Image (cartoon, rainbow, N blue to C red):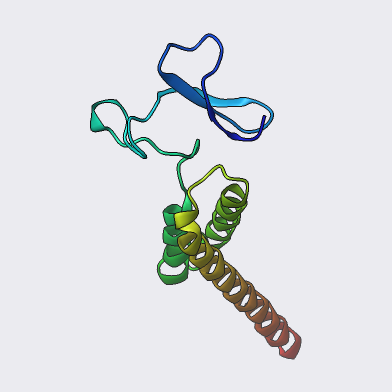
Length: 131
């Protein structure tokens, strides 16, 4: 059966779960009464996992601006994981731009911090050699 939302054996009537192609993900969810709307008008996501795109962007920007690059590699990694999850259909593709931005800012911040470390070590070695 292809990935998607289906009623699962043993779950309460009127519910469904996300099938990722191999296993059921998460618990039973009410079957939406209209696209994106569940019982009582509560929004229901069509994707089994929540997005981490905003967190990736925040960590990348925070590392770039305030944390001396420390959180940039984490933002890069989270952005990359988010893009993979979007490609696999586990997360909402409307967050792809934010995930890309988090990944790119994380890459730039990581490269800059690595260049700063290499420059600092190089200057320290030159200073030690001339002393």
